[in-house]
Amino acid sequence: MQTIQSIPSVNRFLVDQEESGDSIGSVPIVVPFRIGRREGFDLCLPSPNVSGLHAEILEEDGQLWLYDLNSTNGTFINDERVDVKAVLQDGDSIQFANKQFRVILTSSDPAGNRRPMATVPSAVPTPAPETPKQKFQRLLDSGAVPFFQPIHEISSGSQKLIGYEVLGRSRIFGLNTPEQMFAAALPLEMESELSRVLRQRGIQAAQNEVPKDLKLFVNTHPAELECSVLGKSLHELRKAYPDRPIVLELSETSLNAPDTFFELRSTLRNLDIGLALHDFSAGKIHLAELNEIAPDIVKFDCALLQGINKASLKRQRLIRAMVKMVKELGIVPMAEYIESKEEHESLVQIGFQYAQGFHYGRPIDIKTASLPANEQKQSNASKQNIGLSESPTTENSGSNLRPADLIKSLAEDESKNQSENNESAASDARKSRKSPESYGDSNWLMQQRENHYTIQLMMSPSQKSAERFLADQSMSGDYALYHRQGTNNDWFVVLYGIFEDRAKATPKADSFRELGISPLIRRLSAVQTEILKKQRHQSA
Image 1 (spheres, rainbow, N blue to C red):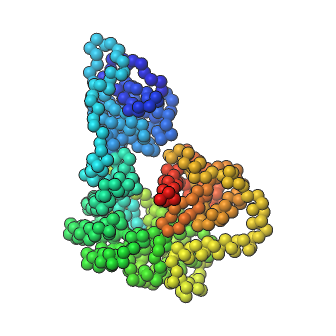
Image 2: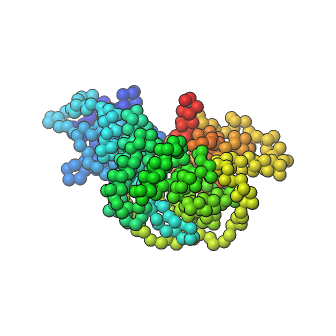
Image 3: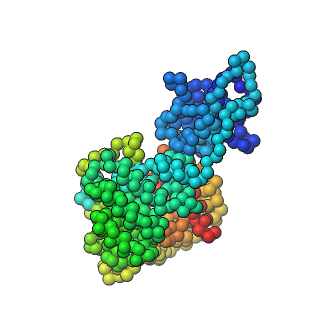
């Protein structure tokens, strides 16, 4: 959009806050006023972060209202996200994704003369910028918003709602996700306070919305364990909500201080608060140590269960043996990140008792959506046996191994068997193997638009296995390979394609599924976050 040299006699403007040469200056607001990436709108913002039709300004009862039109990266007023609509006030700061403007509502020239747009910003003094501490305090005071994701019992083949996990979100621009919130808390040394606020606000919001018999799964940050404030917070929580079933989630990586942990475990029992251990199989814990730790629930790591319905029979047997051992210790096995009916059916046959993921329900804000009541939901889980049998060596050797070690061993064993059984085919694949220049790497992925999508085809702890997979493909299309930092193990991930939205990626994902591959459609922003995490780890 070209810079406007002068403006007509109107008293409402959007003033571009960019200081670069790309600034479009001031734009008069003449309702209806449409904003988006497409040409022809009243405000055209050619940025990949801005949606095609992003937002609209309308006048109602003498006031200007800003509507977000279901944009991908959000519309913000004074750093707070607009759910549907919000009234505009003089001096408001507006962001369309990452493009920032200021609202000017000033008196028009009585003579109707044109005025240079350079004089418009002076009508309202520029407010002092908010400091990181002030912004974070606003997050603690009112910005954090709990979301709730359903958890179902699936052991009987049907789906019964048993609770919700409380997830921390925010409507403040730049602090939307837990990662962003805790990154802001780190330099202020307020991770413990943020963790406590998210947990407390979640249970408080659920009290009148979630049936009293449903469990609430809440999280904690490792900093709370390090400074020994978690016990006090839990006592206050139980005193305020004496009848609510509560389950506290800890990661395996939080169990590095045995004395602190066992003191916490005693506190949880006294308060009648359950314990769930998540990322199970990704950390340092041995299967034999579970009996001593005695969690009520273990959440199996998503990397272990991804595409379980397409996994090899040997891998399914391993997972089934792990589930059996967990259940024999009186612990409930739970699956996370389940996205399809086929994965659900496999979990039922393997013996999982609890599950959560997009297949059962996405995280929702109870301010804008109603939570379903606690009722039985019949699934279409297959009653047919999928051919799983007990591993004859698991009981003798499994208890002395970490789940992560078992996974690594299994991957190496499968790779060896494939090499032995398909030596000729492997030889042909090596001869036709493409050079690294034939597919994208981390740098190429970082150059893609963060609001686009890609298809994850496989991930392996072995770089050779990932490269062998690539060599077996026709390589017609945009393949990519990047290195991901896991909780305890590194992973090599193969991706295919760049798609403008999820709908355009779905047909290609279906075609891979027909070939026996378990595709996963992902946002590029999530992939780029993993790449940056790995780069920071390497430079540390």
